[in-house]
Length: 239
Image (tube, rainbow, N blue to C red):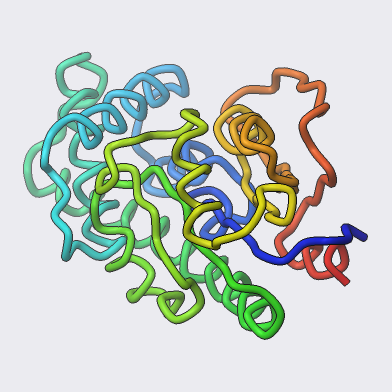
């Protein structure tokens, strides 16, 4: 049990929508379900390309739902695979497979955000909460889409404030929004490097939601006050 906590800062992607699982693994499952004939390394290259494309260009708009984000992200991945000469379906097949991948991934997020909603509902009775997220400028539309918009007292989004994790400054902004000492604030996130390390740098307490990460690299979790393996375990940590 962690004592002295007065406010919470939550990451979004990979924390509230997949229960600690990296989105690359979810989308790879969707590819396999849709029987897209590409190898895992080709997929990973396309995944990275899609992430960078959405981060660099105004492809996502503020009103886009998570389904819209998925569609745009997977379209970028498919374009990369075509340029790799890894997979070049005709337009009819491309659209059919696109719908299948998006549907699988959206349903995955819907199930996990329902779990997160139940946890946030209980925590909201005891703590002010702020969301701190690397996102594309539409995270508030995504929160509304999944019914999570009523839980947070403020939203700090990288595309809006101009600071991205792992820069500790974005977590300092979260602490300031809560109006507390950093030592009174608990950060909950799935990324050790992007959430735990910068949060500890500014003096916050930390809970690592450890799931299936991007790599299998061992992490010496010295920046972590507690490690959990599903979002419901957070209630026990704070009981």
